[in-house]
Length: 263
Image (spheres, rainbow, N blue to C red):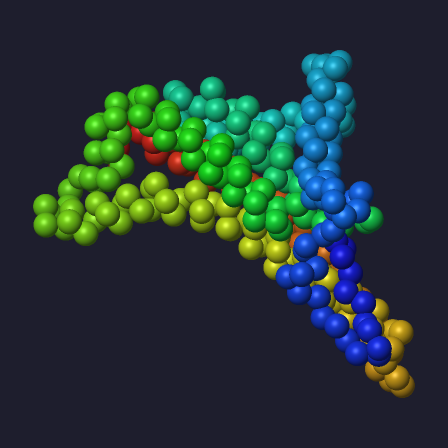
């Protein structure tokens, strides 16, 4: 699980944030870490999945083609079309689908045996997606659609408020739209993956400690700890899917809001 924290000298050493700081794979002086390899691997997996599924398309799809079409339909119709709008969504389908599948695969890495590390539990990866990809895209399309002044007015001066209120409302809107949105978008998935993986490590390491180090009847309690670890794995799997979906939905929502003529 990333880096298991073992008991030392018979004392339980609970896992913490340091368990997510994995050393370089090829030793000191190198820079390639496990999360970096997993990011590249996820791209290979996603590309191979869609290439193999679309290699021989049939009117009546097989299971593999059906799975790929279901994922595509989710990204295209249930996320991009609903959030951006039926007139503008098509150019953004590849982006939204890529964000969803990329985050999904990297999240699911956290419950795959041997791999067992959710890449998005490192804040740098979701922050890069948010700040370097989503943030520039939705502001770019907003400025392109409405012009510089029009877009700023659309985002910072919502209609219908009394004029004195704008002295307070406009700065709030600025900080939210131009500073907080990309940060909260990243922190949401990071926090969920970090906390979920930490919980799994706690139950797993605690079960190991109770089984190997505890005396008497406490050894039997290890079964409970391992049972909770298994249960939380299923819960974490659900959260991993939800967080990928939420990231894609919010990204599409930001793009839709930037393109919209209304605030």
